[in-house]
Amino acid sequence: MTRILQINASLNADQGQSSQLAAAFVAALREQHPNALIPKRDLAAEPLPHLDAARFAAFIARPEARTPSQQAVIDESNTLIAELRAADVLVIGLPFYNFGVPSQLKAWFDHIARAGETFRYTEKGPVGLLPGKKAYVFAARGGLHAGTPRDSQTGFVQTFLHFIGIRDVRFVFAEGLAISEASRNESLAAAHAAIATHARSHAAVSSTNHAAGHAVAAVSGEVALAA
Ligand SMILES: Cc1cc2nc3c(=O)[nH]c(=O)nc-3n(C[C@H](O)[C@H](O)[C@H](O)COP(=O)(O)O)c2cc1C
Image 1 (spheres, rainbow, N blue to C red):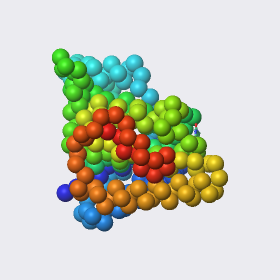
Image 2: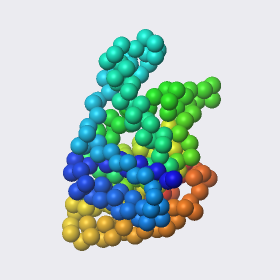
Image 3: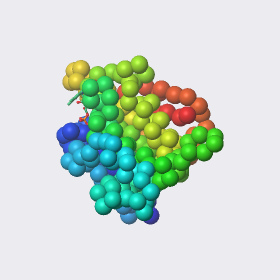
Image 4: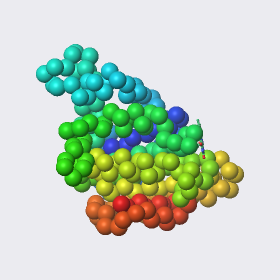
């Protein structure tokens, strides 16, 4: 049975543009997979704490040496990792806030990056431990940033997901949402068209990336990244 994990990071919960785009894609996937399990995590409604020294100490403490509070930190992280590990498809709603990813999403990343759980170091470098998944990222932005040095999000999110083993990462952008009504409408229409395309091809899309580097297909709509 297909399991789709939806991660929303908008301050505006389900009303956020990124959340709505993510939801539209999930709804389209649900049509293909009526029995899919679709857990959803709203990182703004249920924010995770920032990673601090005490939390990181819990991550690296030997299991038998953990204090009760360290075990609680591990339990919370394990819950997040288990949700992700169980998912076939990861769907992220990604708002663009102050030239970066929402701090709530960064906190989620910080709680799922665990050596021995989601990645491990080898003599040849780090190896991600969550292979075989597809990720779809729905990026909503007030301005126009894709393909420019201002886009601090896309490479970062892709790099992080690759690091934990999620190699097939596709981005759909809705940009220029704050520029004008026309820009917003055009951008959202392009994003919804990209969503429909992705949903149609989802079953056929290989989970293996063959290309290297970034392929920017459009400023608004679909931007597929492969590395
Ligand atoms: C706190 C905050 C900071 C923002 N910073 C930027 C920014 O740096 N650049 C930009 O293009 N848009 C910025 N925006 C506009 C958002 O990218 C836009 O509203 C987008 O729809 C946010 O996604 P959401 O609707 O899912 O929350 C910002 C919006 C907010 C609320």
